[in-house]
Length: 564
Image (cartoon, rainbow, N blue to C red; front, side, top):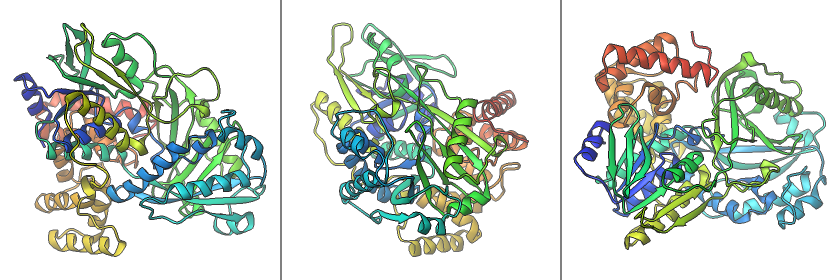
């Protein structure tokens, strides 16, 4: 994989593919990958790092969207469930089955209104009892039969449920169980899609920290956000996949109509080994007093993810979890788990992002569609290229969204689709065993081949799938862990810098690895990490110190981390 500097040199030399994709989140990168599979090169530009916006702030679920049935979006649920099942296969190294429990306080509450919502006679969310949830899950099972690998739903009476999870509230009447999936490292999947695209189509270029700007004489201006260097490209077709920033891109291209009406979602990572044990591997998906949906599930031996909020926001950079949101999440959790009293001292990491939803009238945010829409703008005299703008979209359906955008682009270019991406493995899933016994054999073989401990090989396989072999071989050749960073080796970090277009220190800390999410970062570790990254990217001492200081501030201010 080429470095960022090498790709900038190509751009500087006048090389520019006919397709310009603006936005390096999951949907922009999904489109980039699909076009590459058709042999069609694109230039993807991202003002920051890949997956550094909304794509880095999900609930880390790959799911069908059970609650979308409530608003009658059956087609979206069917599509999402098919894509979920495909990702369980195509990204099996980072997407894993997850049992979900829906606590229910009654059997019949909200049944009539649920029917009205499903029939589109109203969109306002409301209370849901066991009967409407049961009916919804019957549809969920039916819609999810394509490529199915997980069990259908079941219902538990409250007493039977408490035998498995004793901390559930005493007022519950029943629990519904179904399966969805979690994604352990969404940012890694985005980076792997970029690499897969460029393996299949070497003429493609994806450049982070390169911002699309104003349209001048039919050319789009691109600015290196690190150096200020400017480029001009004259694309044949442009895709606006900037997500929550889409309106700003539209403005640069001469449009003044607002299209995005975002909502901010905040999440907390909390530390509680006792609660991890109490939940027994299940995710709780529970209705709140204001009829939103919250969730909590374990993401480690002593850490859990708690979310999410859904508050209107007009600022795409609104990435801070507020005190009021923390109070809200803790309060709603206490109603389902009354014996669990989390405090701010238990928070080890926080994050927020703005969902790029379509602009709607004031009302309940839960009623806003989570489906995606493509808006097409034909060329004009001042803008000599067609524009395809994406509104909305969700993580789970990125592949089919990218396929639809790619088809629109191919039509503009007069080209034909060569293949579907439906069965293409992603990154570390390529050649990675699916069955547990085969994975154990893979780890044992890796340990025997490299001399690393079986425990270390298990960690690397969980992080990288089949690419763990490259990391393990690098570690065997150059042993040594990063001082002050728990669980990460120097060879591992160097390999990431070489192969994954790392540009800033925060790229490594927050996206190429999970070290911040895992609470593995110290002040000493940031300095050591800056030295490693600096050596790989040819930074001087001043740049290294500046990157360490900037990353420390980001972790403390935006992510509420206490770093010693």
